[in-house]
Length: 152
Image 1 (cartoon, rainbow, N blue to C red):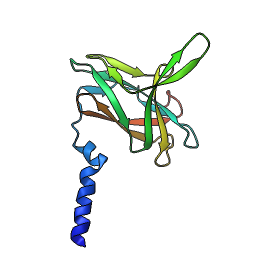
Image 2 (cartoon, one colour):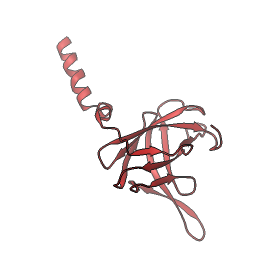
Image 3 (spheres, one colour):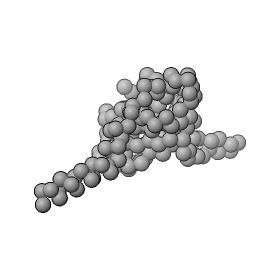
């Protein structure tokens, strides 16, 4: 019985997405711009918008192809699109951080939608976020949760 439990634990660890993330190389080419990183807290576990400016120091553009967090069940990328009378949010599958450039997720342009928190999130917490990049690496960041961009 003990052998079966050990085998099962090994198999589950082998196929665990968290285990795979732990083995994924961390990017040194992508960084966040200071004071650009935050998640807007809303009460009652409502979806929360997240903002960050990513800087790419490499000579190649890098796509952000997936974003996950152990603190939220789902993170989606949105672009706000305006026409002459209204605005709407358009879901994106990815975005590109240009070579030697920046990509800004800022209010009124692009944002991350954090949905279904896995535990109670309150102002002052940090959302742990993992960005998957087109070069096979990841960028990990803690995004402060607050009620306003001015609060640190």
